[in-house]
Image (cartoon, protein in one colour):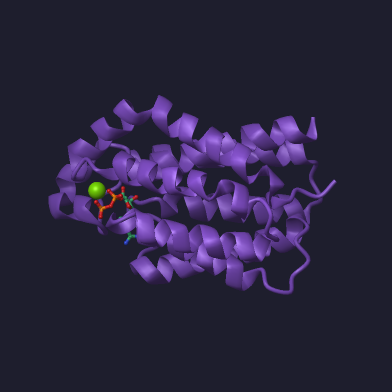
Length: 212
Ligand code: ADP
Ligand code: MG
């Protein structure tokens, strides 16, 4: 059974729950090396998406991703808003005309993550959400290419995302506000990497349940 945007309202509820449950811990991270607004920015974006969730559920994936990207773009200020908007608008573009089985999706996702790198002029190792998004997209593609079973893929995604977030702890930030701190940014996990991990895990939990 293919996964369609019908699942979107449920995914949004899970993302909101995951961010709400970890809001204080992430805000503490963000106050240590950022300006403390990251959770608020994400919650604004997720609330806006929840308002449009029933409409988005009626679309096909490329149209859904376009609408998700535009909604995030207009609802969220801050670096993370424009970067997530770029991710989803990138997905809308890169998935056009592709068959969206797991392999096709993983290829589209890698291209969308490339667009995020270009938008933020950043790459892996700079203590950002990319330290989670890039390895997660690469792992998804590798598992899809190997025809792994979905529960295996989801377990791998959770693991790679957790490792990616944790790896930011000892990085020096060279992009975003945390870069103003230079060496002093070391010792704290990046808030945007942490929320990317939380959201990937929440999506994996929903999908685990759907295919069980
Ligand atoms: P702002 O930095 O504008 O206050 P947020 O607080 O919402 O926006 O988001 C901060 C997060 O965005 C950081 O923790 C980091 O993960 C991510 N980030 C910042 N700059 C970049 C960039 N150039 N490329 C990728 N991610 C970035
Ligand atoms: Mg901020």
